[in-house]
Amino acid sequence: MTGITNLGEKRLVLVSGRAHPQLAHDVAAELGIDVVPTTAYDFANGEIYVRFAESVRGAEAFVLQSHTAPINQWIMEQLLMVDALKRASVNSITAVLPFYGYARQDKKHRGREPISARLIADMFKTAGANRLMSVDLHAAQTQGFFNGPVDHLWAMPILTAHVRSRVDLDNVTVVSPDAGRIRVAEQWAAKLGGCPLAFVHKTRDITRPNQAKANRVVGDVEGRECVLVDDLIDTGGTIAEAVKVLLNDGASSVIVVATHGVLSDPAPTRLQECGAAEVVVTDTLPIPPEKRFPKLTVLSIAPLIARAIREVFDDGSVTSLFDGNS
Ligand code: R5P
Image (cartoon, rainbow, N blue to C red; front, side, top):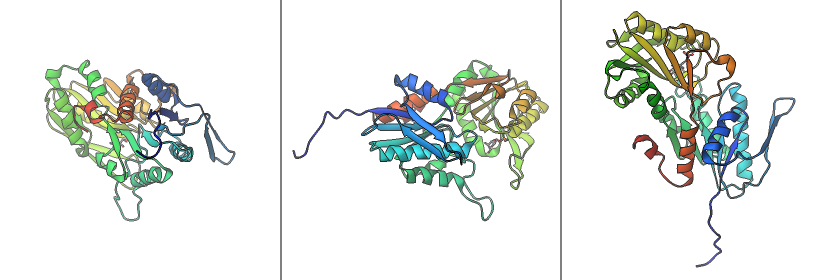
């Protein structure tokens, strides 16, 4: 055989931006490693500087960043980290986006609009990412915007395990907050033992951001413990409206479950006051103390992300984490 062979040992490194250091720390702890020491700061005009403090040559690099507010700054920082890794001769780069920013803008509703979710994918590709990893994309088909492998993780196993301990499975109904998420609600219903489904007929003014109106419930919720499942809660308008129509239609209780707690103002107040018994989210996004409220439960996403990273690194199966579904 020609050429030179080495020991062939792969090296996994985890680098993180500044958006959600606690999540990076938790994922690293699950993997039994430390986050690569990194310098990152802003120049006076808002430009960002990043540099890794140790060699990453030949490594399999995972770059974690939560797309939280100020979202454009954190996306840019993650892109710069991908670029820095590429120029530092890593072997592969996986951009880990626990929450994929701009995922809601995945199609043109009207002429002369961007398809922002596609642009995000293109920017990561251009920067040098070989692979993306994300949790509960707003629409699964967003995977197709990135020309390369996308590991689409589901928070459902974590969330359903919690909900199972909170409801009477013989009297539970899974509710989708709009018609577009019925497929996800179906998967939830199957996971909770084949319970009934309902959905809220929601309409939206597409000329104004964060404006939704819950018109009525389709399905029977009277006397039922409802589990209202969404991918994200931003201002809380969608969910607060949905909880109200469910309670008006006679639901005995409502638990709200969402993967991503964006929780822009006035979400904490709306959610606390909407009548839900509990609001459950994961920590794909940081939830600072001032956004927390007594009815909020935050579940850790770190074990899932760490397991998926390990599967990718070991050339294993990410799909195996979700009973063969992904
Ligand atoms: C909409 O399609 C999404 O799944 C969410 O329901 C929505 O973006 C949440 O936004 P807000 O909390 O501001 O109503």
